[in-house]
Amino acid sequence: MHTQVAIIGAGPAGMLLSHLLNRAGVEHVVIERVSREYVLSRIRAGVLEWGTVETLRECGLGDRMDREGHVHETINIAWRGEEVLTVDTGEMVGKLMMGYGQTNIQEDLYNAADTAGTTIFFESSDVELHDIATESPSVTFICNGVGERIDCDFIAGCDGFHGVSRVSIPASVTTEYEKEYPFGWLGILSETPPLPHLLYANSSRGFALCSMRNQMLSRYYVQCPLTDSVDEWSDDRFWAELFDRLPHDMATQIQTGPSIEKSIAPLRSYVAEPMSYGRLYLAGDAAHIVPPTGAKGLNLAVSDVRYLSRAIVDHYAGEDDYLESYSAMALRRVWGAVRFSWWLTSLLHRFPDQTAFDQRAQEQELGYLSTSRAAQTALSEQYVGLPYE
Ligand code: RFL
Ligand code: PHB
Image (spheres, rainbow, N blue to C red):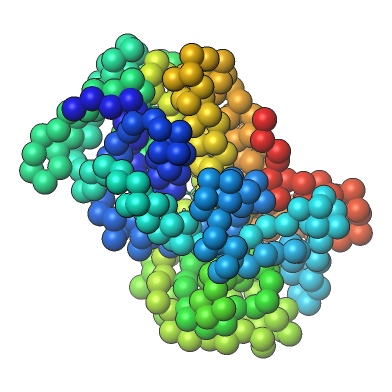
């Protein structure tokens, strides 16, 4: 089988690329390791930058998001026990955020792919990339017990952090930058009404976050040791710990209920450079990971794909400038988000080796943020998302 682009991974990066290529008439297939149901069961991101919102609207994927999404006008950070610092991003930089779950975006993308008749090979194993340094690469894999081979012009590696694409690039041409954090996030989903706003908390017991998916679906997180397992966290223990980390009047507003999902995610910053090699182009978590604190991972996947789809479409119109500059251009935005996510993670968490000095410096920075318009502008500018090139 021959196609123009073989997309590895049917997560948000791969499926948005597929959608944008469908709109431009570029032929492609998508190869995914797990089932469609499994992808849709993964609970992940919940907050979209305004650039992501506009990208989804421009390509015809905005209707349900605009109906069901929740516009966030402020960033709220509880600290020093009872205080809440509120930053109005609209007032500071004229932009807002949108609460709309990754699961919903993924459903919207699969529905659009069904309408377009896109070929997606779900539950594919033994995915291998071949001849990526040549102009005629190929991908082989096994699907439904049958060995498949796709010859193509380009391979888009959208297969997340644990995928095969990045590791198919010779180690000698890749530089990796990595930082692991000494804690994870324990997250739960519960069918209860959320707080009206997103609330981040820096507390003496560790970080906490109150978020939402819709009017009857709340998402909460608490920082926990990496050695903890979900079995050690009953719902009662989770709610008690969350409440201990929030100002009293916020905690009393929260309605508790049984969790319908509970998981622990480690926190990591990671970048692999360059994001392309020969005819292989990486996008999203396949090339970089950020800790979820800044709500940037999905948004970076969207901006990578925005650049990559433009580059591929231009190539078929006879122009290769964007293809040649793809990695450098994508990495400029990636590093902006990587630095911001590291900074916000450092500001809001308790580190196991944190000294009294470190803690006073953290409090000083939160105090400065609560009084300085300049600091609030810098936070807002990065939180709502740096501009696209
Ligand atoms: P994904 O979503 O991991 O999708 C990759 C797909 O590739 C498949 N795959 C393979 N397919 C074929 N062959 C192979 N060998 C393969 N290996 C893997 C996988 O099955 C999968 O379907 O990467 P993508 O598309 O780059 O999307 C990235 C986002 O999913 C991720 O960055 C965000 O979820 C991160 N994130 C957040 N991002 C935000 O922008 N805002 C947020 O509020 C936010 N909150 C979060 C988050 C991530 C979290 N976790 C669990 C890591 C909150 C959490 C808790
Ligand atoms: C979420 O709703 O899952 C969420 C919100 C904000 C973040 C991270 C995750 O910074």
